Image 1 (cartoon, chains in turn cyan, brown):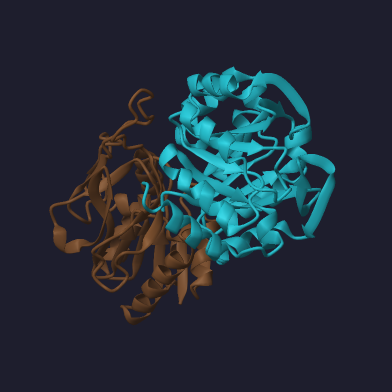
Image 2 (tube, rainbow over the protein chains, first blue to last red):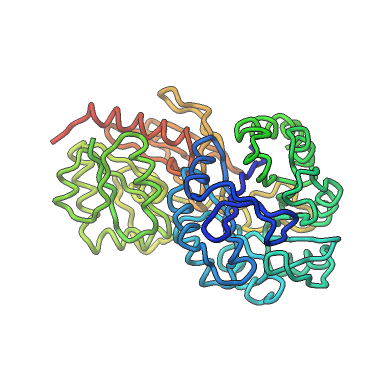
Length: 249
Length: 212
């Protein structure tokens, strides 16, 4: 139970999609009904969900806001939600609607004071998304490089009060080419905050490899395309993660 | 079974209503006492702050409604704050009394809100947010995992009413069962299949209980 598998529901223009390496225009549409997909994952046994408004992440305008709010209100398991949350008001809204954790990315990069306010008020209910391309942080839905080295940014966000990180190696995301184990391990070593890994997991063996980093502070993994392409099921993923992480609490 | 979910202005009730429906209930989300009285069972969910919760209930006369309902031995399900309000008092707000239907009090979980950056050893994070195991339930669901999200918990010396325990740094009361009162600290509506199973069990026992 100390290592969590997060099925991912990414929404672009109302549809449930997966991007390739975070590039817009590369998306594969998996469903026209993201709410049904999300609730389906919960029903299949997911212990958490990860939901992202991709248009919100990129443009700051939460085009898929209604869909996200519907999912967080209805899901039968806890949900972390992000994409276009640019300030306290957005966080307040999404938590009030029923989200259990709000994920901040761009705002953390561009407005550390706002991040500090959000963490001060909501503590553990805030996670900071670290979307890295070649060890450099990106924002605006992975479209804009920040010039900030990943590990420097982590220090800044910790200072602002971030209590959890979600690490995405954007170059692996949607590729099913295997997770960046070294990258996530290095990050987890660098911070005492729990880290959730994202990007590239295609097989149960790769998922187990991430789960074995449990003892280093990696507390979860986000899985997208592999579930949509039926490489394994939600319950298979959870069982594999539980087994692999059980000896290192 | 028709279940009234009490709407007293304390946050999102959709997931609770939806979970009860999934467990087979006919659900009405309402603050209307006549509407509630027509129902076979009452569910009081809750998130937010103890003091405001009690104050909201009192302002609408719903504290008496809950007292009478439980006094009449009609089926009650309290979730999170809906459990805590049944006790005598809470450290979260000492200026206002709880309903005092059960003996015991609500105290803050020991721990710090943030891990110690240097050591991070033995640190207990508060709020207690996440899945945790409930043990010692009396009627067959012991050992299940449920989703918790709270900083305060019930402590009571009246062990007879405790049907489930949980540990997060310290042992606290996770579930209560006394006559027609069922109450849980965790969130069955966010606990997937385990949560639905618990709600089904409650509905089953409620349908055998005293009805009007």
